[in-house]
Image 1 (spheres, one colour):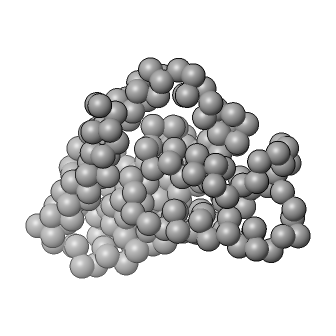
Image 2 (image 1 turned 45 degrees about the horizontal axis):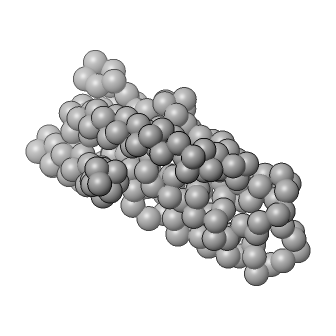
Length: 211
């Protein structure tokens, strides 16, 4: 990749921003985490997403995508494993505890299990359907072929630099929604809505995988 090709860098950055900022499983969970636990408590979740996705980008750029072409059953297994885990995450969001009143960023461990941690968020990327679409689309459409390992690493770092603040905006938006969801009824309605949207984001993948 020509590092001095401004048009290419802008194209890569624009794709990274649009795909990162649009709704998907990660962003729905971050929004819910911001509401239920606050922004500061969600930072590990945010960094886990960006770090895990960067590793995925590197793996796809180095040829992991070809593995799933050669072994489609492995791809199907990951889809269904992702579906089961998504059900668990939706249940967890729907039953998230009430935000604490003392501090907007304090987690009430007596009422819920707390926000997703770094490693769990990083591992989730490997069964996140949107993450796979983003990673494969990024390298197949925007990153020039034949650029070598340096091109793959630089492209992955560029995506991560854009992805991190884009994801952070969802948790920050959730933080600002906390004051409007202080009542149990509104908070539960929000959590169940987020759980439904999380499941809805996975339905197309399951339907495609069933055919």
